[in-house]
Every structure is written in C-alpha cells, then in structure tokens.
Length: 82
Picture 1 (tube, rainbow, N blue to C red):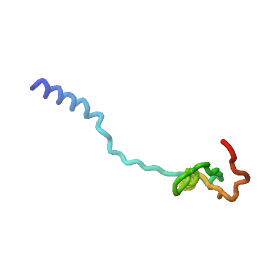
Picture 2 (cartoon, one colour):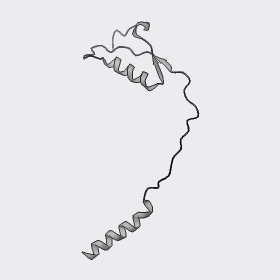
Picture 3 (tube, rainbow, N blue to C red):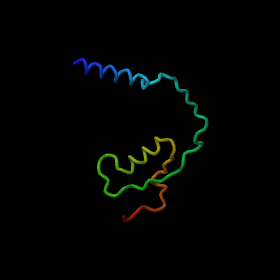
Picture 4 (tube, helix red, strand yellow):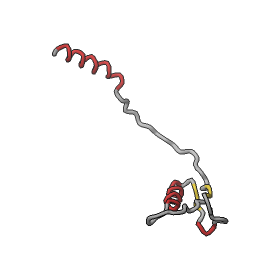
C-alpha cells in the first residue's frame, strides 16, 4: 500500500509543472469584412418539412455575417436536373 502511495505522490509532484497557467488573454480585432459576399442558394428539389434544406442553408449563411443571400426571385435560372 505504501508503494502505491509513493507512486501516487511522485506522479502528483511530477505533474505540478504542467498545471494550467492563469493568464489573462487580450484579443483585439483590428480589421473585418467591410461587406458581405453576395451568394445565391438554389432551392433543393424534394425538400420536405416546414423549412426546406435550401432555406436552412441560406439562413445559416446569412447569420454568419460573411454572406448576403439573394432572394429566390432574383435567380436567373432554376436547376432542372441533378
């Protein structure tokens, strides 16, 4: 039993240098994206449910702030086959 306790104590002492450091991190955002990139999301065929897959993807892209999703009415041509 004492041998096990000695090993445990040695392991604890050896692991002390690896304790996490409590440092404060300051992050400063210098630049950003001035304008969102315009993008069109083609509606998926066979989408079921209240929100189609295309609507979910468009909403996710718009919420990211990096993309401006064009409305469906602005699509020049709709996909007719895969």
